Amino acid sequence: MNKKKKYRRSLRSYMMAVSMNILIWSCLVAVILIFLGIKITVHGELTHELLGVIVLIFCILVILIDGLSFWFGSKHLIRPLLEANDVVMKVAQGDFKVQINRRKRKDGDYEYVNEIDELSKNVNKMVNELDGMEYMRKDFMRNVSHEVKTPIAAITGFTEILLDGQISEEEQREYLEIINKESIRISKLCQNMLSMATLDNQVIVTTTKPIRLDEQIRKCIILLSEKWSEKEVEFSITLDPIMIETDADMLQQVWINLLDNAIKYSKEQCKITIEAREQEDGLVEVEIKDNGIGIQSEKISKIFDSFYQCEESHKVNGNGLGLSIVKRILELLEGTIVCESIEGKGTTMRVVLKKQLDK
Image 1 (cartoon, one colour):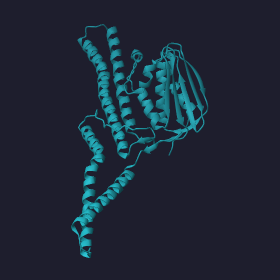
Image 2: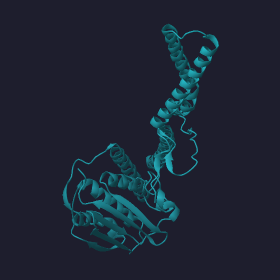
Image 3: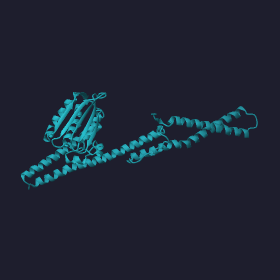
Image 4: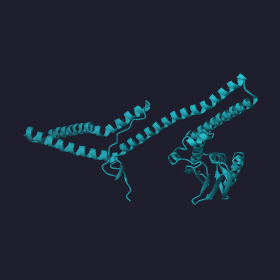
């Protein structure tokens, strides 16, 4: 398979070719004009003074012809730069829907027409990214408002009922439990938002140490024992003894989130399978599989987006930030996560990590 050329013609070679052509044609036109002028006006001997004047006229003609040719010819080169400048100005004013009209290629032997075409593509990509970020920002604010408004409305309503004092002691306890539950929900939301903001601003992982991956996963299972014991969840655990060097606290947060989801969306007396094995090239694969409610295929690609929640997830407590945090942590730890799910049959989360982070 032939590798595509990056440019059909680079600007350097294009400008050199244009300059040479203009210079050649300018000299040719100047010579013709001078020759005709001499033929018409000079009838005697060609003196040194006259020769000097002819050379001076030749130079002036070449400069004039070159200048005019470059002046009118540069419009072709400057036009896309002016278009890019207009687009950038509109982006600076907050318009993220604009695009540069790129020149269509006549064949597929090259990636770009020239450097300006590459610039146009990158500007268009930047504008699309900014448009997506603007949408995410608005969507983020809308989701945060919704997630906070619902529990606060519940707390306000039940506290007003309690302050009225016209309910039984049993009802008071029931309402206090709801208030406590909603307060914990707001607390978890704030904690997750703080974690997400911290992770978004983090670029590298500075604190690493060797840990036993299998022991860390077992520890996380024990930490969640209260949740899975209530559902009588059965675990099938196959963990190779694996040493990795990573940020232990961040990685533990990954397992806590994934195991918590597996338990949360599983039915009573179900089975959760956990496997960890070494791969080639210094990689480790961890697989967490449940037999829960599963996810619709068209929604799988969205589950790692902030605040995204499937309809099924609304049946249990959640705020749609857990998997976003997981994905961001794995990006920092140079890992990946893949979700495979069948609605009504269960979900498999497959995590691949490096045994040692790049220095």
